[in-house]
Image 1 (cartoon, one colour):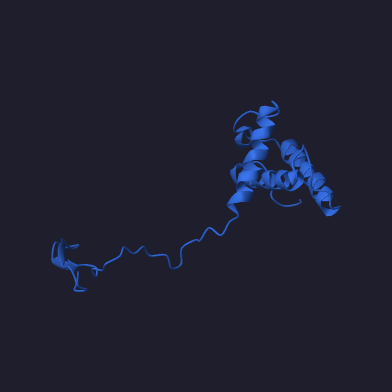
Image 2 (spheres, rainbow, N blue to C red; image 1 turned 90 degrees about the vertical axis):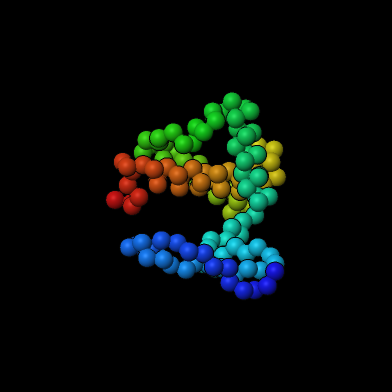
Length: 129
């Protein structure tokens, strides 16, 4: 294929003919400039999912429990649990529930849940007042 323009006609706002087209090329192209690039550690995301799955196997929580509406007390309990995991991490203790980096995984899961709850809640203040 050559790089000539392939012309097409379309109807404009007042039905006047308008020429549209893109250059033809040998390979496909997808515009990506200015788009969000997911620079994430997929292995860690898997660890987060494994941690959540282990809690379900143990009967601690039901599937999607974290998406159910939380009371202000529930939000505070989640913050407190997060702080306990963070303190363990700060002391250099990462293992929890038999998982090498269980405290890190739990903290990340809790932050995901807290983020979700604060975004979805209409009755929870996001400031300290």
